[in-house]
Image (cartoon, rainbow, N blue to C red; front, top):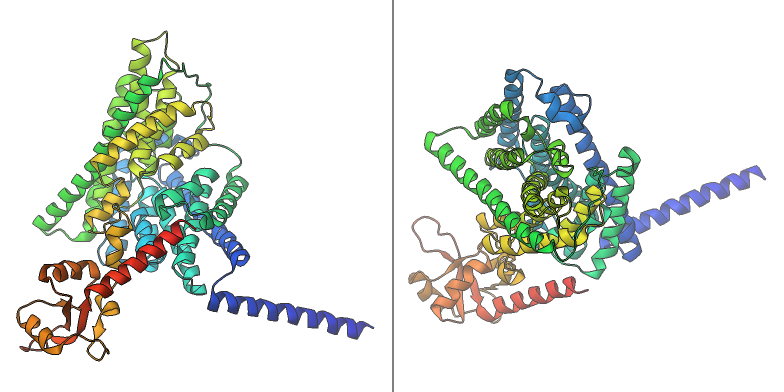
Length: 562
């Protein structure tokens, strides 16, 4: 009986393996079904979560070693005891290493971050640059470990998107599936990094995918929950910030103060964003003027950061110790004001130096300090009708961060999840709404979308503004052998007049030419060989371009409302 039983077991194993192979072939060739996709989303979420946890653990371990601290939560305090030359040397050496990494592995010496993930979701079927993304992750890891004054959420989000890109290539995912998997990876990474499952899911929908489609909600939530579970298994069920006192809001009477705080935080957020962009322009112009090698730019920024950290170690790293001090009221008025200014300068130097990192953690710190300073004034003027000054720090933290990220919903929730204080929701929501409304009028809706606008990627205005840029002229034109091709003589005349478009251009570049001519079509050409005229390849008809555009708009609307 043993032999037949053994054969039956072997046959069962062989059958199971065959079923697995058949399922894999179906997923790879036809795309995953709903249940299969949820399973893939879970696996992607787990992989992105471990990547985020590993990134965080690595930074904290290296920071603890470099700055001689036993508790990373006391980084600022312990760093202040070090010799000044060591504080100067650490970010200088880190900046040089970052410059060498980016110079070797990227073509533009630029760190990839959240803006590139948003661009990948909108324009590249949920894919991002893999090799340059990994190099950017390494550069940001060095930056954050050696005193760069930025946050870890930007690198973590892009690292998660690299993970999803590899999976998309493996299963040959289409655009909708690729974007959904990207959202799953981002949600899991944010949740794993900050122990914030609700905010992680909404951040992926609100900031990355920029829609709340029902079909994407379930898998993204699954991945986000997976990230939170992994975070709690590693770090325990604790919040990032501990607020010992219960905040109490004197309703109705105190709400106008939070309206004013929201407007102030909106302005501070704009100052933070524009300082980064101004510093980046200044750095680029200076680099071009003096002919400085691009690998030295991060080192110069690191040197400036080190010099600043000698006097203000508060700027080192993500700054959670100073943020916690603001939320618990352990800072006085002048300290809060000075640290706001110093932190903005430090973030601008780090980002302008192309050192890498994100803006989420700096926004938390700047917002908490702004709110605390405002709260000290407000409670001092109206002590009988005001709540705790730390409540203003909490509201300010959410208000500045929401304005910078352009994400009022997920930011409001992540503030609650980071602090565990759910009783002051109205105050935070009022401040967040006012700051987001004001800041969105003064920049292109958010820091990330403004970054893209500066690179001539127009996503802030919506699909109608960027979809034409996703089509190559060659994919829409009618070739010379098309049954309804354009008249060859008319095309030759237009070419002689200089009215044509190259086949490697996109429709957003071709449409202005087409509209300016008033013609139904324009010739599509290849570059001339030698001194001859451009080679005719076909013609772009206005009706074909508009048809492609309408189909893309319909597909986008269908995805966002499905």
